[in-house]
Image (cartoon, rainbow, N blue to C red; front, side, top):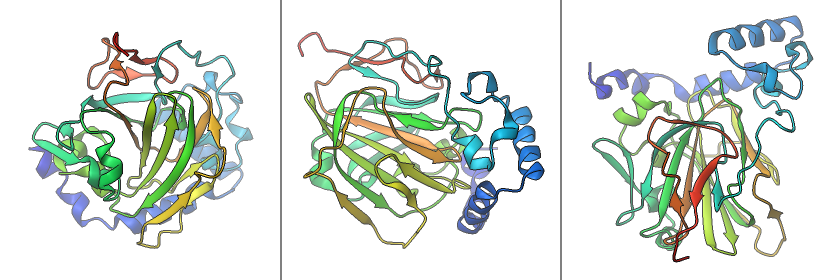
Length: 284
């Protein structure tokens, strides 16, 4: 069966209703029932609770509290590099942005402009730049950190679909990451602009940032914009910037000449927060 055929049921499922229900369940505080759900999830997906700041699942009042759990302080040492990996997960794809096109999977590309909610001026800043698409599976740590130091400029919530973002769906749904609901976070740094796009998915109850809190819900069906240019919201490399309440994908964009990717990186390779993502170009 082809990947396109495998994803046909997703076009028919009530994805938004399922996501609303998932968010309700994940935020509920039901004592022993919540603990039983967490215990089942840990067993099914092989979650390593030894890395958690609090490894006792009984101490998480809701599934969301467990899912966005903090790690021990020394669990993810930060490499000294131009860019560090901002999440635990797996590499979906990475490489150059070519003629406003980002590679999704064999036979599929989508435009940077569409990913960024139709902002062609912002997309132009990443012409011939670099992208990295990182998938967070259910077993992963679900906080998102900064790949380098930067200052927040603005944020945009872009409404969209709620397809799954797993590898099969990435191969089967055209333009997946530019059609799903997402939060576009724009930063400025000493080496130019960069963007982190938090992409929603089926059952992803919400996405949150450290400066705003929960961004969605509400889901109004219209883009929402926040301008932070007059504020000084600064981050160091490795600082937490957001989290998924149930897992999804991050797409990172960097301008031309910013760096070259870690030569050990390859599609489907597992990655961890803090490892080397990008090395400085020799001519930079």
